[in-house]
Amino acid sequence: MKDAGNIDRRSLLVPGVCILLLIGFPFFFFGGPGYHAARSFKAFWNLGHILFFFLATWLYLAFAGNHENRAGSRLFFFKVFFIVLLVGIVIELIQKALGGRIVDAGDIYRDGLGCVVAFVFTGSLPVTRKDYLLLVYATVGLLFMAAWPVYRSLADEQTARNQFPLLADFETPFERWRFGDIRQLRREQKIARHGRYGLRVQLSTATYSGTSLFYFSHDWRNYRMLHFSIYNPEKNNLTLHCRIHDTLHAQHGMRFDDRFHRRFELHSGWNDCSVALEDVQAAPATRLMNMAQVESFALFVVRQQRSRVLYLDYMYLSR
Image 1 (cartoon, rainbow, N blue to C red):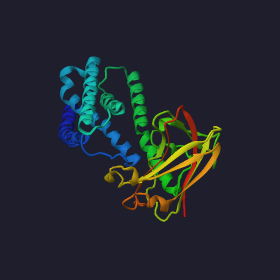
Image 2 (tube, helix red, strand yellow; image 1 turned 90 degrees about the vertical axis):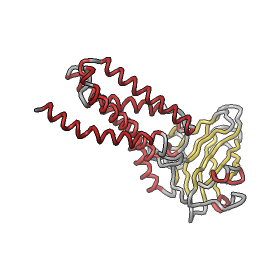
Image 3 (tube, rainbow, N blue to C red; image 1 turned 90 degrees about the horizontal axis):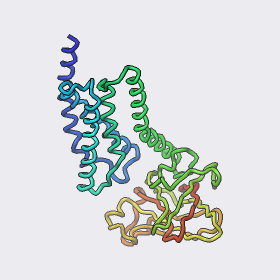
Image 4 (tube, one colour; image 1 turned 30 degrees about the horizontal axis):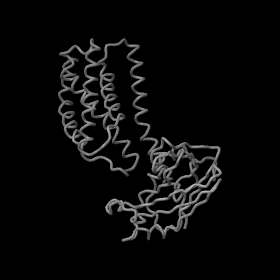
């Protein structure tokens, strides 16, 4: 009777899982968050890889597991895991061919994690009870790690809303994630213009090197000035470029004359920089910038002969 109950539940679940997989599969290639979508939306979307391959693996176990003696065969697990990784790689390659996306190793990892979760939580691995409990704890830990970007994004998005018109002051732990390419950024306590922390920006010898505020409140109407502080730790002056554009910039071909651009000559030590937002609004040659949809604020240097470091702090708008 117990087996009959399991069969009845499975017969009810299988059609629903099949429908979910059929609905979800096209989203690997179409839709999804845009380039400037909210971090939390991107993080939630990434978790879809885990859910999809959890359901796909569960479905495969429901149909094929008994025929292949899954409960007593580690080979069966490795075969299914390899197939999932292979399918994940193929999906990434198709995404690259269709939309020019880069192959994301993180997505492939999440595909594999979904497969592992299905095996662990259906008890389909041939291990002892003690080892099984360890696997459960490890899998739950990996799931928490995979969900961490969601929490981090939601927490900082709420912080950013509460802070505005402060754009970034680095006094809270997740603020550097508001910027693009965080690998070259580090929160520092030694050098700060305001509060206890600043942001260390590693500059390279690339043609353009710097950082950009990527996730922030985009409506800058009713504000007159943008302020930010830059610390130059060297004796020699350095030319820093500031660029601002709105969401319509891409529709105008990303032309140089369709965005705001200004140079700042940084002397040694702290430099308190300001930009009049009326100048930003009037910067495009053929239109007014939409100050309700400011999309990017970038600071960068050009063609440095050697690597350098700058420190950024206290970015805010004022009336």
